[in-house]
Length: 160
Image (tube, rainbow, N blue to C red; front, side):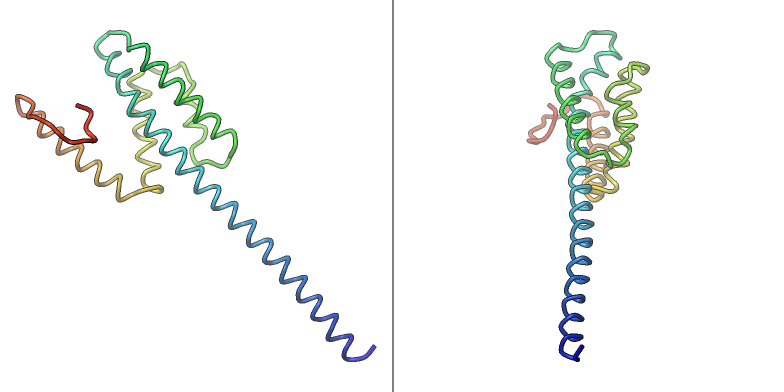
């Protein structure tokens, strides 16, 4: 064989190896991207569930039944989150999430506390600055409302 053939075959081999490496790197990148998207999606579903589950836990503490529409909405959110988790099995803390969603071995207050702990854990990886700011705002609100009569509130994101 001549040098031209060796050069040609070497070029073809280098191209094939390069294409294989690029394909592996792209698959790895896409997997990591899907994993990150699944974590963010799970976090926001959990956050939404936590906001609604507050009413269930507070009703339990008062010894009352929670409103039916709240329970129905919480169930709907839990099933949507479960469907999302089923599509991507590598979500962090998946066993804890499923335990919170479906286990009947805990009270609503215990479930709300575990959900809060899970959100704190997730928030550190998904949106740490947002988590820090919301914790600070929440503490300021608790201190503000804990001092006698509740002041007027006009915050658009507030529960009042």
